[in-house]
Amino acid sequence: METTATQTIDVVNPITLEKLYHIEETSQEKVDQIFKTAREVQPKIEDMSVEQRVNEVLKIRDYIIENREAILTRIIQETGKSRVDGMTSEVFEIIDVIDVFRKLTPKVLKSKSVATPIVLVGKKSEVWYEPLGTILVIPPWNYPLYQALVPSIMAFLSGNSVVVKPSEVTPLQGLIEEIIDKSGFMKNAIQVAYGSGITGVKLIDAQPDKIHFTGSCKTGKKIMAQASQYLIPVDLELGGKDAAIVFDDINIERTVNGIMWGGYTTGGQSCTSVERCYVQEGIYDKFVEMIVDRSKKLRPSHANRNIEDPEDCDVGTVTTEFQVKIIEDHIKDAVEKGAKVLCGGSRESNTRHFPPTVIVDVTHDMKIMIDETFGPVIPVMKFKTEEEAIRLANDSEYGLGGSVWSKNLTRARRVAGKIKTGNLSINNHMLNEGNPNLPFGGTKNSGFGRYKGDLGLYTFSNAKSVLVDKDSSNIDPNWYPFTKTKYTLLSQIIDHLFSRKKNLIKFALVGLKINSIGKKEKLN
Image (tube, rainbow, N blue to C red; front, side, top):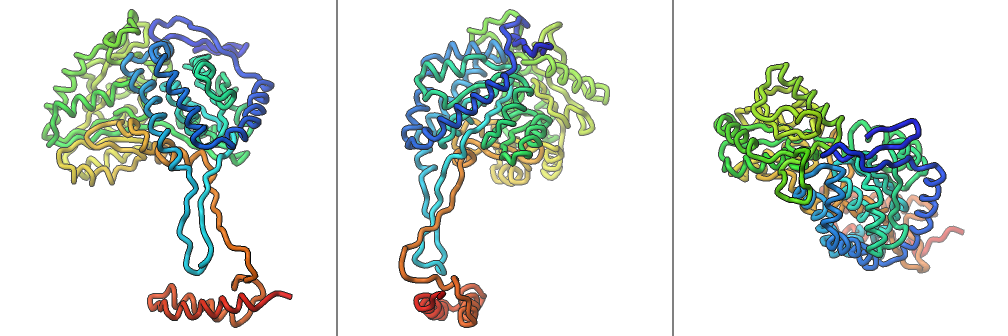
């Protein structure tokens, strides 16, 4: 990707390094028009029933199912993913989310009755879920379609209009518009604005009603700072440095395969990839030997890939040049400080093809164990005790995901409960993201806010609390006029209803007295 003085941005195929096309920054005039249109269409979305919105979203699902191969090829051309990775992490996941929420949305967004305290007898309490307005979705370059469509769909189902600003690295220019137009999905409900952070600034200045951002911690802080000027709420799904803790009672064959997938899928370019692997000393040597052997047998990406063939490679290309340089810098730093590379370790010359890499003898003073590497690299470190493993896993500024591997589920659950993350898998990795019923988001420098699950709809909704009373001649006892008698009775209610010596019979008698006062007293 290169930005010129004329603000054109080249989009490059990371597999071949050929230029695919270029995009330009969205003009201020265009941004203004996009938001004008979004605000005009939003009341129409709000007036639709939830079932009608679900039917609109099903059009997107059906179109993706019918055209998945062509869509997948577009994604691979810009990301360099293996075809199986693209199918599972982009196409399949979008379809799955829609299929789950076609049933879940009407239940989740239905107005709910909640308990009303006895002191408010005769009144009803409800929670209504209403849309926020127009949502700005800013997806990352590593999951360009999934992270663009899924939050947009959740926001639409909640009654909002949406503006999407794709990454300038993998913008998939025209693909979202094609899916919307050709599927027959509601016109203008989801619009797209292309460009870099320059366009992002313009879009935030247009004051959307909420921002949903997925990307780096550095950019997330900038977005939050700008949004704070307008008090725009934000969801931030930022980076991760996920730890996998492997105890010595596991099925080592299965666990090695699971850790490899967690570390190498999508070329290791997932916020929830295995970026630190802690293995108990009893199986450490055998584990390392096996993961190195298995990693060498995987098919890495290469310049002459046939992207239509699902068996052409197992581990995809690193999408951007700057990310390759970060990976190389982390490995160099680790080696200089005493680490050993047991397989992989360097890219194919003059390409972005990086083979599966295993590093040992790592410590927490190395970048590769501190900073987000975001590549097909698994650093492995030995631990002795459960307490040590927990301490090492929590020794990070990030808290997005992680995993605990043990045959002893009691121990696994105990350890999982002590790992400070927003998501965690037991005897698997990253699979939280495979269940649309689970909320997803981070802690610490991995951000805040949740999408998917019930919370994924609530995050794009205004939860309005409503209290319903009857129209009558009664005056509430807590209304004016204030008197000593009322004050005394209110004090007695506290004693009889809330204290350790509470007496419900006495409370009821006092309640009748104070209620009778409300029926008689009026402010003249």
